[in-house]
Image 1 (cartoon, one colour):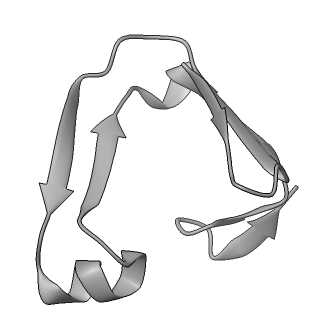
Image 2 (cartoon, one colour):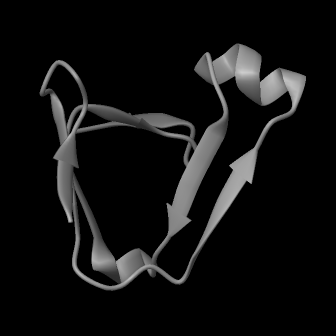
Length: 63
């Protein structure tokens, strides 16, 4: 699976089958995302991200 953000500055690719998924309908997630929040779970080594993005785990901008 491949994709990108709406402006094209960040691109991602996943090279394996997803392990699971998550979805949340709480008020906080709806306020942050504008709708229901959802994600797919894949192994770290199967995910490739390119472009300028903010790494939440490190707390630092990445490029």
